[in-house]
Length: 91
Image (cartoon, rainbow, N blue to C red):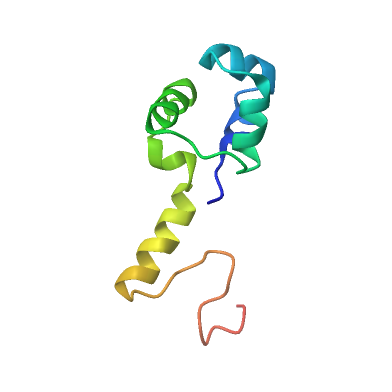
């Protein structure tokens, strides 16, 4: 499963080494998590969420993705702001 660790780390202006020190792990662990080559334990998910000050679910899905997931799951059509409304011909 894809995660947003790299995006959140870069937004926080942290290097992989700095994040590793904050979490008490090796830098290689951070690299593997970012590349989805090593699964995240529940404890690590909670630590990462605390470091980035986000909900644990936001490590995997941003708000835009969450809205898309909800729209797909309940049958409500997705509304995207970058597309003209049906029938408007881009007006």
